[in-house]
Structures are given as C-alpha cells and as structure tokens.
Length: 224
Figure 1 (cartoon, one colour):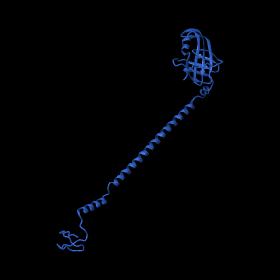
Figure 2 (cartoon, helix red, strand yellow; figure 1 turned 180 degrees about the vertical axis):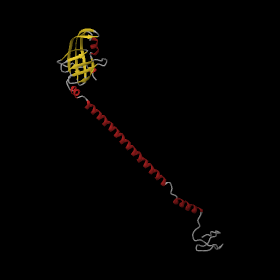
Figure 3 (cartoon, rainbow, N blue to C red; figure 1 turned 30 degrees about the vertical axis):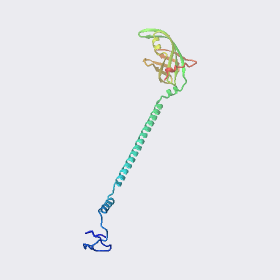
Figure 4 (cartoon, rainbow, N blue to C red; figure 1 turned 90 degrees about the vertical axis):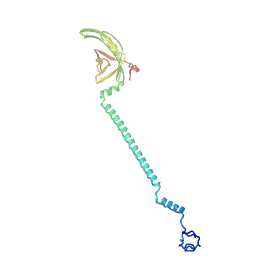
C-alpha cells in the first residue's frame, strides 16, 4: 500500500504511513484514467443518445405514408364514382332519346326496303308561263337507314334541271307519318313528299308511283 501524501510504501494492513504519519485509505486511489472512465460511463448512462430521435422520425414517416395511402384511396373512389355517374347519365340520356322517337318513325324503320316507279305528264303554271312536260324516275326507300334514292330519271320540260340535281344521290328522310314520307335535299327548299296510302308524289310537280316487283339497292357509298 502506498501513502497518498508522500508516496512511501507501507505494509498492507498499516493504518498510518510510517514515513509521514498520514492516515492510509483502504480503497485504492483513483487514477486519472479511472476518473475519466467513470465520468464517461455516467455521461453515457445519463444521456438518452440518438435512439429516441430516430424512432420519432420513423414514426412520422409511417404516419405520412398512411396519410398518402388514404388520400390515394379517396381520390380513386371519387374518380370511380364520377366515371360511373357519367356512364349512368349517358345511358339515361340514350334511353330518353330512344323513348322520344316517334312511334310511327320507329315502326317505319322496321319495315322492309322497297322501290317505287314514278312518272307523270304535267301542265303547270310556272314563273308566269304554262309549262308542259313529262317525267319518269324510280325511288328506292331504305327505312332502316331513313334514306331515299332517286335514280333513272328521264323527262322533258322545266323540271329536268331540278330532277337531275337530286338524281343518283342519297336523300335523308326528314319526317314519316302514317300516310306520308317527306325528304329534303340539302341544296333545295322543296320537300319530296310521298303519300304512303295513294302512291302519289309531290316534287314541284305531282304524279303517281307504283311499287316495283324488286327492291333496287341503294349504292353502298351513298349510305352512312
């Protein structure tokens, strides 16, 4: 055992230094290294360290991930509901349009196509003068396409330019009733009117139509 005052060596069970007489301690003196080690240990035990901070950051990240996931789900649900509502509205609109179609028109569209052979000798007052002439032509009617087709026109008199204008062209039907079919060519103001019961026609002039034995097909390029 060494004296802490003078450094003299003493026997192990001595209570006082034999050289300076100072009381001897039973515990060994602390060296600088041991003091530093003790302080470091206390510091390590007393301070919380970085672990709690890291855990807090991870917790925040998890919360943000759940928030983003929840937001994505909500947005997807809103988009789905919007699209579903748009489709439902479109179907309802189509249904309403179908329901508003005139029953006569709907029935007419289901009838078989047919061809009419028409013609007339006419005498008519036109532009202050009495006009004479003849005309002969055929009309094919396609109820399904709501279309008529005038072809094979032959004629004399003032009607020739008008008939040539509407011949060999597809003309959309504009109105159908139980006794009449009306159609209008794009560049003309005059309607083409056919009486479904009597077979009479009215296109500037009036004449008679008879149903042909066979339907003359409308050229495919003229159909929709």
